[in-house]
Image (cartoon, rainbow, N blue to C red; front, side):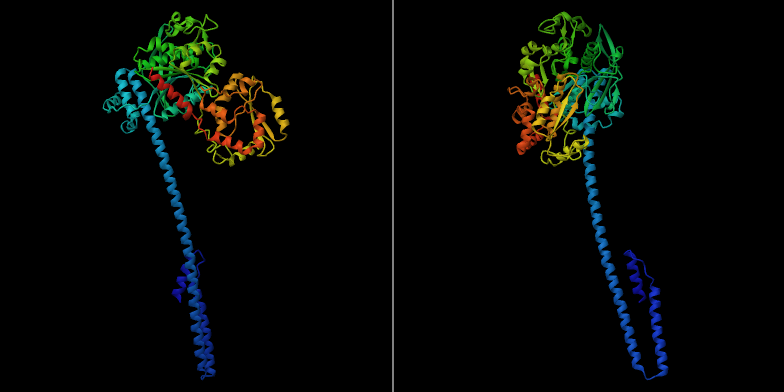
Amino acid sequence: MKMESVINSTILSLAGFPKSNPSIHHQKTVKARRTVCCSLSSSSSKNSNNGGDADGLLKEEEEEKYNDIWLLFKEAQQNILYLNKLRLVAVEELNKANREKQLLLDKIQQLEAVNKLGNEQSLWRELLLRIDSMVLTGLIDSAEASGMRKAVMGNKFSVALVFFDIRQKTDAELLAQLRHFSVGSRKNGFHIIQICTEMEPLVSVGSLSSYVTGLSKALQKKGHIVEVILPKYACLDLTEMQGLREIEAELYSYFNGQLHGNRIWTGIVHGIGVTLIQPLYYSSFFDRERVYGYSDDFERFTYFSRASLDYIAKSGKQPDVLHIHNWETAIVGPLFWDIFVKQGLGGTRVLLTCHGFDSQCLEQPDKLALCGLDPARLHRPDRLQDHTMTHLVNILKGGLVYANKVVMVQSIYSKESIINSFSHGLEPTLAIHKDKLLVSPCGFDNSTWDPSKDKFLPKNYSADDLKGKSICKVALQQQLGLSKNSSTVLVGCISTESLDFDLNNQKAVWNATPKSVQFIFMGSKATSADGALEYLKKELKLKALKYGAAPVAVTSNENKFRHFVDREQETTRFSRFISSTFGYLSLSQAVDEIKNSPSKWKQKIVDAMAKDFSWNAECCDVHVSAYTALKSL
């Protein structure tokens, strides 16, 4: 009995119940037995012949003992069953924890793989920049540097295994290792150097910055090598630049009759090799608050363009393409063909990107001599002479004339429309060089601008599942103090002070559909109507489509804005999609279709959201096509 009580007490304790005291239970049993015994003794003294009663009491005692044991057994059995339940729950919790642990380990492994790939890409690009440094410091000549670059670019995925400790090595130590590195065949990709004045996130003023970064990343995803050369502005944001280092040797470049020293900085941004040029004597050129808008902008960017070419030539680089942008670096065209093509760059060609023709830079011809060009040679109608102000030279025109290919970044209009209606006086030059003109849409970063992943949305959604879109719409209405109704048509109107917005048109729409349309008016910092139009036609429209908003443009200038879709053949795929999907819909017609044919409208929105209008798509394809055509020239 004592042993059973101890066992029972132990089980109860394990199961989380209060532990009973077996000695107390035993004492109660003994006391009961003594009471029975005393009663028997007293009865025996009175009647010694009453033995049968004693036997009955003994049987009762045995039965009581049996019942006590059975109760203990049942209690033990129940406790064991309870413990088994606890054990099963604990096992399930353990299995769940193990599964979660494995998922976490898998995620860590994936992140490590992505991080490793990013490190490998940064490594070989940093190695290319170190080779440039060796040329500038005189350790190697340009011919040897060219061979080393081919070796690195042809074997870039094995570079990480050989040069993992690149940052711990001096140039002399690294050179010895490079000379032993096996030379592989060069990959069939292009080597492109972008000479530009903006790059996101380092310095951003307009659409050029996102274009340079977005296109460079897209090109590198497809196996091409892209480098970017920028001025070292005082306002640069260097927080996202990796491996920033100064090359020890100074670079000398020509300007205003003399050679001037420059400090050269190199680093990596989003996997793209970036070179920063910092003038020493003309340090004030880029040590300013703003990027543009100074009276000496021609001198500033001409100096930078010439210094960039001096750097490329002296570092022994032999790119396939020099990619220049707008008037600020258009002077590279004449400089390249008149001075630098014979400095080891015979296999290089020039591509100019124009984001618009409204800014061209007109200057006195004699200023061309500042960077080493011959004013008399270039101040001619077929070269840099301006068509209207013939006593001046037109810098953007010079880029158009001397570039081998010209890409006009324009999502909607065709080549003919751009030449005839948006050339800002450059129509004769564009018409002459029509065969080398290409039209490319803009793009956007679809890793950031994606409604299925956007962390700023109250509910994510996609083309396959639009449920979250209504939730986001109601949340926007609530934030702006509008009546909350997911069936109400919400119209976002973007305007500028200089863009005459037709409010009467919006009132007509409101009166035609009372209480079923809400307008949200948003301002833009564009300084002109053309600037507002360009903003709408480029990234904003592409992002709006991705988020399920249709582009319906409305303005008092119907010919220029509302009927914005050009149906000619030489247009972008994006333009043709807009034409076939949304056509010439006015705002009233769009609202009517949303109300009266919701399923038809929804299908249009789904089709638009499913299209890829990012940098990786048509924009990249157009530029690769242009680079390919350049190599055959």
